[in-house]
Length: 330
Image (cartoon, rainbow, N blue to C red; front, top):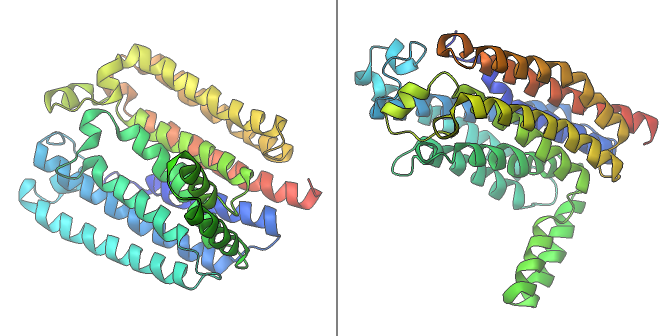
């Protein structure tokens, strides 16, 4: 079960649920069937990501002592090719379902496909050769953008009940093309890419990105020795656990502070920001566990589970808060 990592699939479906809740808040409609299908597609892509990462890590030797590695469970490096084949099949299934859902969305908006393609590319360059950007300590930025400001708005756009956002993009893109090059043209294209995506969605995407990235950050705490031996310059290798635990605390404070700041500026409904406070105890438990156990790799290994719990609770609280705000007319 540890190899399958069931809780980790929350990084796939939480952006879908939050985007669906945002669509309900803005439009008052919730396409349950499409939401469930997008969640399934996201889970298939995350399965590819997990299995391919196991296979790539088996190639570098960084996971040779990791008992929950799928490659190790199946017999070691000789099974790497089989794991990669399964991963590719899951990716093809997930991408195929995503393509069908996006193609059937009203308005023929090209942005969901482009944004989700960007997220998948981020997933590959994270561990995949020849890039292996996680070995350069760039995994966390990739994770933040892939699951936050890329995937969350993509799912929001793909779950629109009509073609209004697509029409707004088409009009803005026409204006951007007429603006030519230079800074003015770049600004016009940036505005076009964001057309039809309200500020509340960008705020939500930042929160989702931060909690997702915390999971990856926490997964390194007990792996410093192995990462160092394999030449992997993860943030924990660079920082050490003493400084990293303070970074984790700061990330938790930043996440909940961002929700409150977004509410104070009118970007996020107060009901939604208040709902995220229900996940604060999970954040405190995560930080306290890191503070108490960070010096002993065997003891701090479960830290990722605390981060996953915080991530799931925060996402569900965002959904509940958006539904409450819609009901209250806030």
